[in-house]
Amino acid sequence: MSKVLLITGASRGIGAETARLAAERGYALCLNYLHSHGAVEKLVTSLAGDGHHVITHQANVGVESEVMAMYQAIDREFGRLDGLVNNAGILEQQSDLVDMSRERWQRILDINVIGSFLCAREAVRRMSTRNGGQGGAIVNLSSRAAHLGAAHEYIDYAASKGAIDAMTIGLAKEVGDQGIRVNAVKPGLIYTDIHADSGEAGRVDRLKAGVPMQRGGLPVEVAEAVLWLLSDASSYTSGSFVDVSGGR
Ligand code: NAP
Image (cartoon, rainbow, N blue to C red; front, side, top):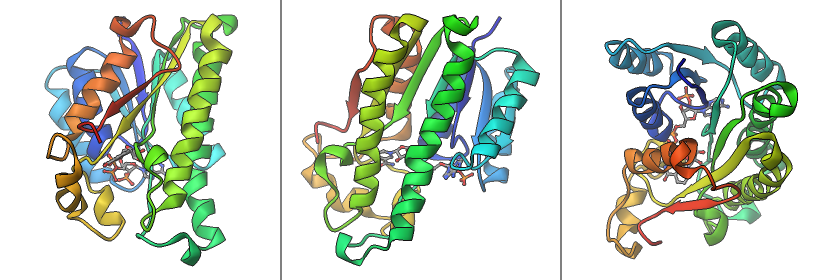
């Protein structure tokens, strides 16, 4: 039977490329999205030719009742879970911290941190060998911003990814004896729509001269690292971080 993988924020960018590679490698998929219904349906159509078992599920990962309903849909459709990619994430308009509101920080933390926590909790409940699960793997999308700090851009976002790093380390320790590996990928400057959401669609090109490899990254280059961390090829890797940042 195919391994079952939930990818949050799979309608676009890194999540969509991760879905493409996962389908190629034989995973059954639940593809989560929030607004981009058309994009996720188009993605599924492009996968469907290969006969994959794929469902889509609209849910805001920051809302507990919606996350619970999504996992119930997975239980009904597949009856098991083998992996989670905690990919859904947002950032807001570039700004100095001094001009940020409390509400903005709350939005960022609700989606990037609480959303990842809720999805990880429900995945552990299903995958843990203590609960009769088969074990599995969780891959969290952190960011190089957690180290760089994102000054004058989005310290709130960088802080949310710092929280993801701590959760990755702690959860890996908690569930290591329950058959579950927990790791994170830290992308650098990757060509996706997320930069337009920050008010600067051309951000990767503006900053790429500062990348040792002198270029931005492609979503598929991040997806390859995610798939490796999900796979048995990384069977002794847990609590680890893979930078996909061209050396930045
Ligand atoms: P993106 O192109 O903007 O795509 C974001 C995805 O997240 C979309 O599928 C979106 O769904 C989904 N999403 C947003 N809010 C959601 C919510 N509340 N509930 C469920 N889904 C939600 O972003 P990306 O660049 O691929 O980023 C993916 C991950 O990589 C994020 O965690 C990001 O922080 C991280 N990352 C990206 C970069 C980069 O340079 N691109 C660098 C470091 C880290 P809808 O479109 O359906 O709303």
